[in-house]
Image 1 (cartoon, rainbow, N blue to C red):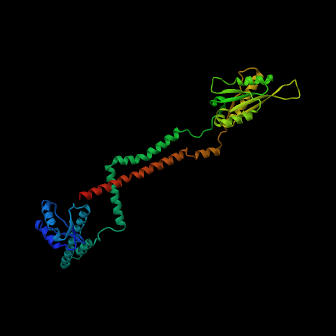
Image 2 (spheres, rainbow, N blue to C red):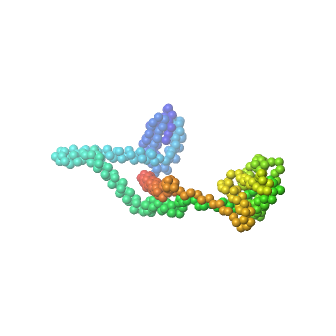
Image 3 (cartoon, rainbow, N blue to C red):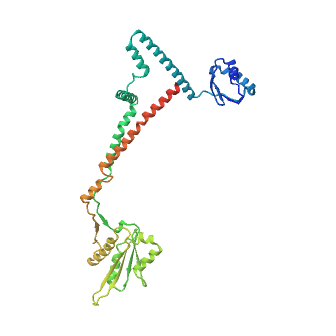
Length: 370
């Protein structure tokens, strides 16, 4: 490739190159660019050509020059030009044969050759569609036979996803009624129950306080704390503790009780008022608080510490409407099967891209080899 100046002598440059390579010709002469196609088998003469161009550079009007390997695009363009020339020669030959046949009187052969030259023998319409469909099916069949492992995987993907959905549905438990829950202090960890004896001079209040405290194991996680409040109530004490450590009160001070003498008109009869306290943060704390007081009253009444009251939470069973709603959720069999099959079909459809990518790659390699 040569970059020309305004005073470039194209004819002299061509003659200079033809001294070494007589068959060379101008490839392009557009604007300031002048190119020649040099045969690769004459590469041993390139040094002499370049030396002469360098020595006569100013006289020939050359701004710069260089050499490069022919690109694939140029090769394809050249091949296309050659093929176009061959097609034109074949068309002219066919026209000559038509003229010769016409002179001999065989009109049917002439029309046949003319139709072939004009491309009228190619299929059109429905016949062309059937031909293309048959070719695609044949190509797919050959590809399937050669890549039977991929074809087997395509068949097994939906089946595998269906099997996974059935295993998941059979393994994961379905919707069942909730189990009963015993309400006990052992269900909670690290609790501290506040016990207040507001009237220590009352014998009944003292007995109930002792019985109530005996329900706790001092060596365990659930303990009790005796508080003596003189100038404030239990509610004020809870409020003060919460202002200092609110998370600690919510997590640990779940229950509490206050025993005090209940004033009556009769002096001979003593009555004790038991007030239950709870923070209502965890679930089932109110029935737990009442059950502790009821057990203390039961032991005091019977005189036997072996007696205990047990409180159990029995949830109501699901009605028919709730069961239908649960069946319609994501845990139902129909949803799992439909979702996994659609997911498997998505993978199946995506696997066909391998077929198109392989064809594209092979076609590219064929062009490069050509």
